[in-house]
Amino acid sequence: MSASVTIYDTTLRDGTQGTGISFSTLDKIRVAERLDEFGVHYIEGGWPGSNPKDAAFFQEAAKRTWKNAKITAFGMTRRGKIKVEEDAQVQMLLDAATPAVTIVGKTWPLHVTEVFQVSLEENLAMISDTVAYLKKHGREVLYDAEHFFDSFKEDPEYSLKTVKAASDAGADLIVLCETNGGALPEFVEEVTRKVIAHLGKPVGIHTHNDGGVGVANALAAVRAGANQVQGTINGYGERVGNCNLITIMPTLQLKMGIELGMDLTRLRELAYFVDELANVPHDIRAPYVGLAAFTHKGGLHVHAVQKLARTYEHVDPALVGNERIITISDMSGQTNVLIKAQAMGLPLAKGSPDVQKILAEVKRLESEGYEFEAAEASFELLIRRQLGHGERSFELIEYHTTHRHQPGSTSETTEATVKLMVNGKAEYTVDEGDGPVNALDKALRKALLPHFPQIAQMHLEDYKVRIIDSGSGTAAKTRVLVVSSNGNRTWGTVGVSSNVIDASWEALVDSLEHFLMKSV
Image 1 (cartoon, rainbow, N blue to C red):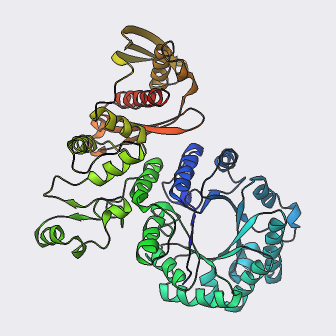
Image 2 (image 1 turned 135 degrees about the horizontal axis):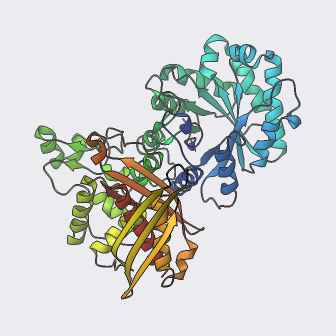
Image 3 (image 1 turned 90 degrees about the vertical axis):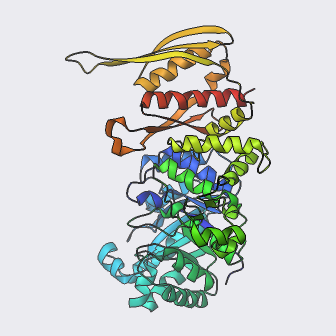
């Protein structure tokens, strides 16, 4: 088994191929920043040139400094029967200006002759030409051997030729892809050992979860000597998904003794953050991070856990940023509050009255539908207000919006009126916008700008709405997530109400309050 393993995240490319998963360019940047902060080693940003969002992501990524991760562009080998220098797709990989590039090539003769419709010899040339060309231009090259395990069953000799071609051309890492997700761990381990012996160096592993063993297959490859695991946050991916990094990272570090260099106490926070940006409900039964992962409901289990936790807990929940929940206890939930408060520079003592007060307020708000994982700014304001440090910069007196539609015309106008008290002075403003939220945002800014000119530096970048209790029909509550930026950093805020405008207003106000607090 390899002494060290790198983590390669493909949430922003392979993950977005999952049903119902979509990220804006801003979402992708925020996810990448959070992954980098967490300590992920490689972040695959997408396929340059395949769509405008991916192109925009690489442009934005090039402007930022990454602390831990190598941003990686993804593409294919050159097309058949053309020179690699003339392949536009390969050139786009270079234009993305990433330190690392991952290229996928065909391993299975079935795909080579029936899909690519080239000879087996030409396929080997396509692999070696592309790797050598990218290496010549100074890129770290990872070669993804697509359908490797299916191919190995039918034609092990040719399968080994494809990865040897990539290796001999200078690929820094060969990654074996279990693309169809149907192999079993014993086979994955056996084949991985054979490939490592054949190449004389470690390989990476990329698995899918179609047979429910995506994580198990990746662990099997690591046991055989693989030194990189590719996967996605929360297991997003095509069909039933990819290897779940949220499950495999703590397993590698806590159970197999492979130090990844990551602070796993932030694992649950990372999983929930990505779910929120993807607008996906959290899986309460997710290993390590789910709400139910360390919940004990009563009877013998509760009695045993209160005496000796490890009788019914495979790891300490605090190690992965989760919490033990005993349904008869009112002490659950402190861990997350303490971890987040400390990260914000607000150290609190476990069991203190302040923690209990904050926890009670968090539970009350969460029962109403609030989620703070991607709304870190609202959470910080909540803590500061509970501690008596959150003096508001302004107070709302009233606001309202009107929407006018001209009969027989496509012209529509939304107008917002806002009345505030700012520094003891009443401000009354009116503005128009593209819809009620935009109009409110503009009217609010107009009222505050004379008092806080720095507000001109910030702007709203994203706006998401989720229906919480859809069974209530039009009376359902909505949760609004607003993302704002001042050009140097971004922050999220949340609002909840049965009125989407009220929820939006709450999130907008928190965003401005947080900015003003940080700009003092």
